Image 1 (cartoon, one colour):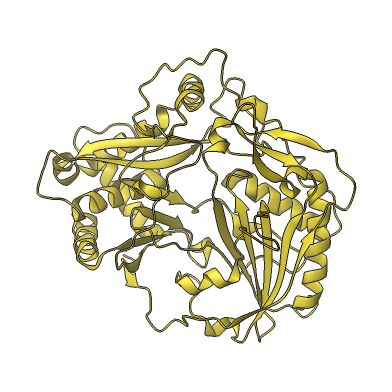
Image 2 (image 1 turned 45 degrees about the vertical axis):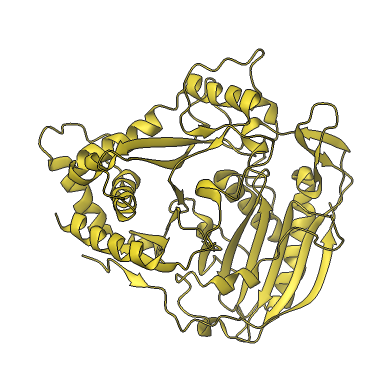
Length: 450
């Protein structure tokens, strides 16, 4: 059995003493066509920024100042192939739809330094809130009201190591297409051609005319306008005091959970017993019961993203850029979650993904056309587990670690890989008020050992 939980150390530096040395715009290295890019109904409600970090050890041949030049030039070349990334979001005055004005206004680029060495900022797996200093926010980047869709920040450490932080609008990429973007960026930095030619035709996910909603879509919440409501529900930041804990499951732990799900009485199918499904089922019941108000009939809904590229008919190209993900959901009452076998919960979770067929996906997109639907549930699993950001090979090597920037949100549970991904396993980051965290931790151990 692995280390089932550990607290995020309280002695992590709360201030990385980051100094911004230069902020500038990077423009496409060649002239690009001025045009308007359509955003799908999946894209348009994801109008918020996502921050990601890549940490790199020092490299004799690639000190930070050399990497700055190569990265900046590679980004300029990438903006030729990803011209929308140099554009700006705008609302069409006639249709009211959010779209991208591909106007070559540029992407942001920040050069910074920290007074710390890389090995002084703690275990990189520990989600230090101070890591937010390593990623620049897109809003009002150089001028008030100017919000680039992409800002890249390179922060050098005293040891020669460095971090590259990306802040991108979620309208630009989902996890899969951002991984492809990084692979192409790395190739361009090495003077090589693109690894994958991106597919930018977001009309492939346009709503049907007329829209036809053929499912109930309980996982979607009707919005009053085009923008998600970040002040409520699973997306909203919490004002409560939160404890942060990492629950580490080794490959042996995952194997044990899978075997328990397989061995349950009456369970015959192993098709749904994946690492993701068993961990999701396990943390779902712990999260739901940790906040239980003693009502066994209280319902809990968990949300998680499903890539629809291969589920559509015809399938989307794997190179499709944009958001080709929909939110799967699983619902059960607290009595089922507490008393049901793991196998049953795994089946409920897996049914959420199986539900997303071509017709279901088209129905969800059509729902967005009519109601601006946005994911709605009590808890959201955001999985960075198998996206493979740390597998990207840059001229200066692979990242020592790749991770999201952690936010103060209690209803989002993060899955991400261990520092040494070859060992297998997964890290589960949970943020909860102290009393709920104590109960979650107790339940995590109890249900793991059953």
